[in-house]
Length: 289
Image (cartoon, rainbow, N blue to C red; front, side, top):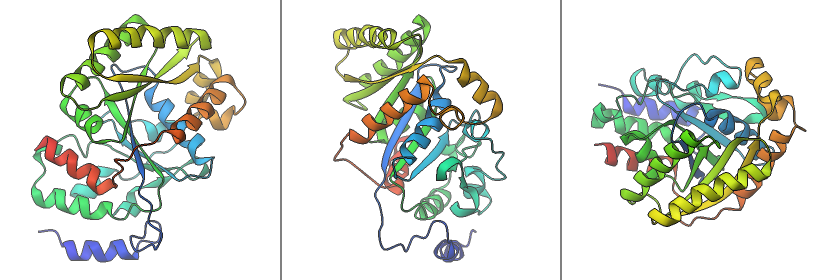
């Protein structure tokens, strides 16, 4: 039996994420997902987190792409622990979270949530208790896996804001629409935001969005908002190979400017249904039970 009292005592002593901070912040939780893999979702999340952090906000990235997470690699890290160690190896949040560029925090996902439905009540309760240690964070970006499955839909249902990533390719648009259709069918959200990645110019981004919105407006009952596009740029490929986010490596390139503009829009979004990270995962557990 895990010593929960001992775990809580260790949380209080944690210097990085002290649950006893006087000024507690209720973070805005945003889920970023896509209808298919290979659309640049994780690269977007990593660079977006830095762009928001650069405005003076504190950002935590939760890599929830189970078994395929690569946010740590994109940030140039090879973490020793991940969320698996929090659940099964009695590690605390402060031991697992790593600090990346410009102070962005990353909670590596690993395979810790791959069997989330099989967790015992004791394991879930302990995980929720340990999440108390995440304090003084303004934004939590949930980088989920791609496609349509129960876990992705659960993360979509429980967040405050949901962002879909697509590219102008017809297959990518079709898969993004299928995901939006599932979200509408199960009444998980009444609004989603769209990012169009890898566009040749801003016009292609708006044309792609118009195609997507026309289909959604015709056949679905959810609203879709355009958050912007990201220009295709060889500098992005170079940055991925160098494991340095392009907003750090090439801050003045078109893609970096696009990310900064999207970050500004995201900070302008308002939602009265804010919750803390414990409440978020409590909802996740209820859905997947």
